[in-house]
Image (cartoon, one colour):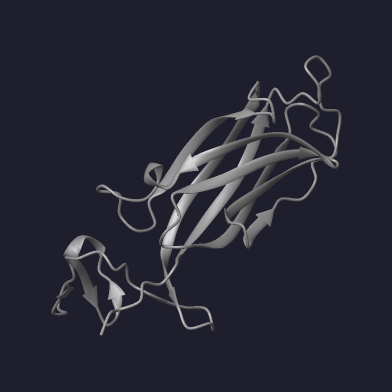
Length: 169
């Protein structure tokens, strides 16, 4: 029987943006917000920054599921109803390699408008929390092989005093 993979839960903190313009010369004046999409059906958005102009700041945490097959996280900056710019963030920038669970990655990406013209920068951080199971907000340890597990929870660096450590393979 094939084991079905669970989506991961990520915490995206949208920190700020820089140099946003509505058209090529007109800076954003107010009502800027950011939408983060992990797939077409799963998105979260920040509140509106009403005072930041073309340098808005949100510092807002967005918790969402990231499907196992997702390759990009899409970040869109809006001013009112107008799309200012977007960036596709490769999932490999914050998942994979030797990055442990709960590692906080600080990232900055160039936004591009619908014509591909550079239009500002978005600053954010991403933390991979766990893989989700069930629907009641329960989480399990990462499905990565060789992750030390104690009582169903990931052990810190495999060092647990007085408690036997098992490894999930």
